[in-house]
Structure formats: structure tokens, C-alpha cells
Image (cartoon, rainbow, N blue to C red; front, side):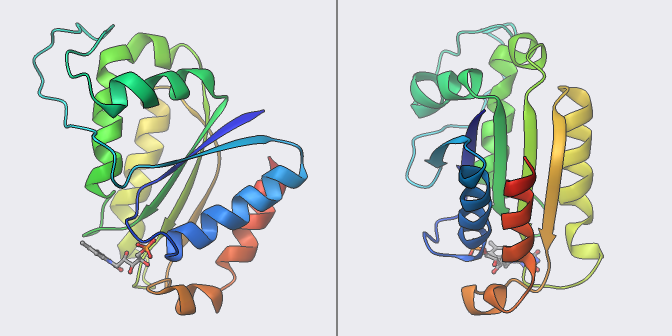
Length: 178
Ligand SMILES: Cc1cc2nc3c(=O)[nH]c(=O)nc-3n(C[C@H](O)[C@H](O)[C@H](O)COP(=O)(O)O)c2cc1C
């Protein structure tokens, strides 16, 4: 299976990347084909709601989403959302990508892509992932995507903290389970 790993943190060796690496290690052991896509540094602009695409493309913004990422999203079997929680929610880098799904809403929705969520946060409370989790589950229901597993790594504020938790191991096992 083709798996596209969408990384949204600017920290190349940060906590969310640790979970991504472990997930990838597990998935590769099972023979899956991984493509990593780092959103940091990409020219991906917010949807401006012009509706020129009429939800079935193309988008008038000829940026890295339209010219690069869109094709990768269409071509993959699974999308892995990798993120740090920012103010109790998805980071803007990744939310911007989801908003751009608008220009190929039907096409993407009809493909029933598999998805995985790998999220980290500094806090280790139930509340910290509430919105992130609800949004992910609602998005899966809407598209529809087939959720194949999610990790919400609380207490993962720094790479050192993250390595002391069980979440890297859980991410590896999730990768192996795919
Ligand atoms: C802009 C910003 C907002 C954040 N908001 C939260 C938050 O609401 N709750 C929390 O527990 N951690 C929050 N954090 C901490 C990060 O989620 C945490 O440090 C995470 O490990 C960073 O992942 P990374 O190393 O992959 O970038 C925030 C960090 C930043 C930079």
C-alpha cells in the first residue's frame, strides 16, 4: 500500500517527527511504500473561498498544493496526519491543506482513502486533544476517510519527554498493524 506521511511541524527532529519515524519503521517492515511530505517551507496558501473550482478543480492558486501535493494525495492509499497540537487544535499548516481539499471534494471523497492520526502535545490532560480528536473524527466521517488508528501523545512537549513515553512504541506498533 502507498502511504503518504504529512508532517506539519517546523521541528525537523521534534516530537511529532519521532512518532512519524516510528510509524514509518513499522509500516516499512510490513512492506508498505512510504512517501514523506514536509509541509514546512512549502508554498501552500489558504483557500480563499473564490469557488472558481466549484469543488471539482482545478484551483486557481498554482502553488505547491495544486502543483505537487494534490497529485500525491490522489495517488496514495493512506494519508497520515502528523501534528503538534497548537492551541488545542490542528496546526494551521495542516488545516490549510485540509481546506484545500475543497477544490476536489467529490474526487477525494469518492476514493475512501485510509487515514491515520499522529498527534503530540505538551500537556498530558484529556482536554488537550479534545478538539483535535473531534475534528479528525468528523473529517473522517464527512469525506469519508477510513480511520486506521490514532495516537494522541500527551506529555510529549520535547523530544526528550517524548522518548520517555510509550507513544513512540505505540506509533511503531500502529505502523506494523497497517
Ligand atoms: C504555537 C504553539 C501552540 C501550542 N499549543 C499547545 C497547546 O495548546 N497544548 C499543549 O499541550 N501544547 C501546545 N504546544 C506545544 C506543542 O504541542 C509541543 O511542544 C509539541 O511537542 C511540539 O511538537 P514538535 O516537536 O513536533 O513541533 C504548542 C506549541 C506551539 C509552538
